[in-house]
Length: 136
Image 1 (cartoon, rainbow, N blue to C red):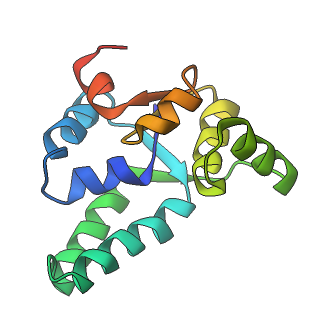
Image 2 (cartoon, helix red, strand yellow):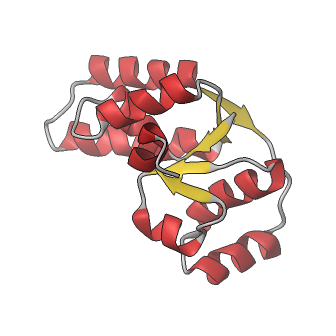
């Protein structure tokens, strides 16, 4: 079981240069979890792609449904103070901090497409391509 961030989910359900890596992650570990926050973040990714003319509504909805099949929502209790402390500790957004908190509290790795997040939390986070190839 691994925690995945919204980047990895988007890579898995939207064709692009990192799709193969994300699908390799699924093959290595098909049990994905994430805080419910991923839903709002992925909706924003889809809406942005639609506004840019890169995605039509029916494909966006299909992508979202595919993401729902890949990941299970987890509720990990965290305080605002705890979230802000993690965000400050890693110089990351509060959104990113929530994914880190889930990984840390569940004792799992966070697979991410964000190299900055990996540098900030090297014991908790791994880059998607590194996880996909087993270069941990």
